Length: 408
Image (cartoon, rainbow, N blue to C red):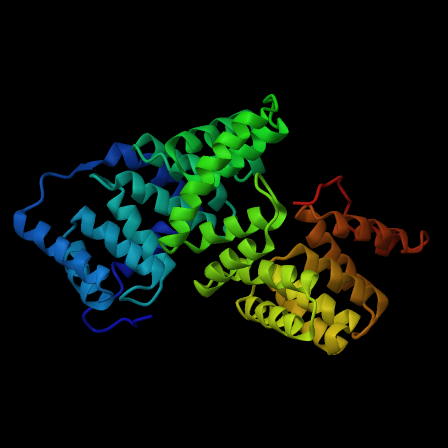
C-alpha cells in the first residue's frame, strides 16, 4: 500500500471535529437533500483528467491517480471526490484512512451527480464499520438515500439491517422485500439468501423449492463470474455452498478450490472455513499441518472464529499444541468481538485454569457474549450467577440480569 506523499495530503482534515459529533452526523444525513449542489456538465479538460486518473488506477499506478484526483477534489469536482474517497477507503495511492474517506464521501454526496447513489452506499458501509452509538442507524439512513438515488445495491444491505435488527427494529417483511429486490436486480449474494428463504419458507413466505432452485442457479452463475473476476467474497460463498451441499451435491474438492481462491485473495473467513473443513476430512498428518497453517493465517488476520478455534485446539492439546497459548488467542478473540472467545475465556477465569481464578472477570466476559445473543455465553452466565452464594447480596446485586437470547 502506498503511503501519503507531499503531493497527496489528507483532504480537509479540519472538518473532522465539525462532522464527527453524533448529533452533527445525524443532522448532516437528514439535511443532505436540502443542500443539494447541482453538478453541471464536466469541463472537457477536467473530464480528461478524471479519465486519466481512472486509467492509471487500472494500470495499478494508484499514487499517480490519487495525485490527480486530490487536485480536482480540492476544487469540488464530485466525480473526483467519489473516486478519491474510494482511494482513501481502500488505501490505494494514499494511506488507508476511513475517516478521510468518510469526509470526502459526505462532501461528494452534497452534489447531484452520476455517482451520488454509490457515494451514499459507500457512506453506509463506512458507518457499518464504525462503533459509535448512532452509527448503525446512520448507516441505514445512507442506504435508504442510496436507494432513492437509484442505486439498487442498497437493497443488499437494507435486507441485512431489517433481518438482523441493525439500527432498526426487526422487520422480516421488509427484509424479505429487500432480499427479493436485490435478487431481481441481480446481486448474487442476496440472491442466494433469497433462495434460502424460499426453500425454507421463512419470513411468512410459502416454501417453494422449485423457485428456490431457480434463484439459486442464477445466484451461482453470478457468484462464479464474480469469483473469477477476483471477488474473494463470492468465492467464499461458493465454497460454503459446495461444502454444505446447499442446492448442489456436496463436493469437498470444489469447496476447497473456491476456498483457496478466496483465501489467496486475502479473505480470512475462507482461510478459517478451509482449515476447519480440512481438519474434519484429514486423512494424514500432512493434511492436518496444512489445515493448521490456514487456521494460523486466519488468526494472524484477527479473524475471531479462527482465533477461537485455534485456542480450543490448544486447550484440548490436539495435534501437539500446548494449552498455555490458548489464553492469548482468546484475549485477541475477545478484542475483535467474538462471542465464542468470550465464553471460552470466561470458563477459564471461572475455573482458574491457566490464569488466576477471577469470578468477576468470568461474569463480565459471559455477559459480553450473552449481550451478543450467544447461547453458550448466556447459559454460562446463568450458571455463574447461580454459583454466587445467596447470602452474598452485595456481590449478587452487581451481576447483570440474563435475558432470553438466541445465538447470532
